[in-house]
Image (tube, rainbow over the protein chains, first blue to last red):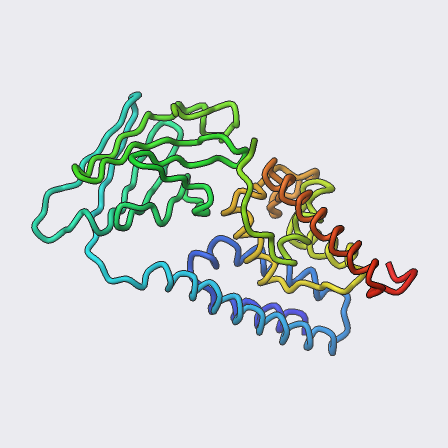
Length: 188
Length: 112
């Protein structure tokens, strides 16, 4: 019975967005398995039904959030940059198809790791650091400056974004910043 | 001074922050701790708990950390400085509400 319940729960995880499932699916299945340990058959049935409905609700909530972010149809420019030195910059590629004033997806590496920034109509709408999505509360945009706030309230990364020229500049973070230490502050 | 989120956390997120105030913990232990903290009034489902953990990670209120044990299968979570500040702010906000409810005799004597 226990194995059947775990298999049913695992099946319900297929409802979740792939990225969420890959990140937490195994852990969630382990937790569910622990929760049904030592329970009666009836209790396992009730819990499995409840947990599966909950997965469906979580799926709807995460997909709604993604849809809100992706709803506008727009042209997109993709900029990739790799930086191992101390000062980095990247310019948008010139293309008659791409309108850089609409959306920019910026991917970059420096010695401290990878980060991405998505800019829509001149404003940051999404960011990740080392593949972890960041809340927009941690992305501060003022004029030409975009700062990413670290978990300890420090400035983890500072970028200059010149909308007119489509140029993005930042000071490379040293490898010591991989650990996201609060002592490791970006040049402000 | 850490940046302070403007909106109060959801009840489940607040419960997770309170559960983690005692130290780093993993998903199953967080759920059991919330059950204990609320006297069984709140029994979070696994999916909702992980969605809340995901959002707390995104908001920088919690971070992954090394747990007290050596179980490599488990992922441990702990409060960041911003998360601890948010937990304290939320606790004060709730305490003020409870005080107001008590003053209006909405909470029977000895119910807490």
